[in-house]
Image 1: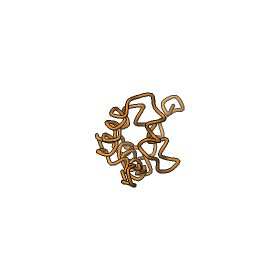
Image 2 (image 1 turned 90 degrees about the horizontal axis):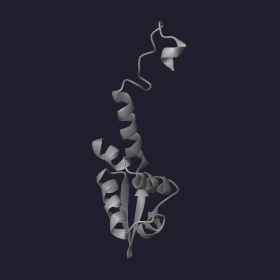
Image 3 (image 1 turned 180 degrees about the horizontal axis):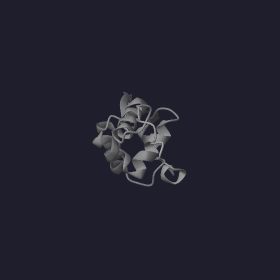
Image 4 (image 1 turned 135 degrees about the horizontal axis):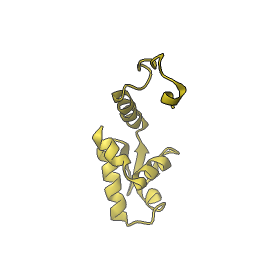
Length: 102
């Protein structure tokens, strides 16, 4: 889970994931969306691949990236559950007031 949060800690990588929500894109198409060098984008892609958030597929001379949304969902759900939140979380105490519930 820590590799996922490391990957999500950078705004460029978060934007890559947002762009991939619309569908697979080539490395060039993704890189064109950012004002950074290609080697910098390659490093971002590597972090996302190591976190298993994206999948790379070779298509001729291009690399096509796909979002692995299930991995992201799993990591976020695990994080939420680690705080006792979510579907299995206990109900709030009957002594809780509006102020304590926020």
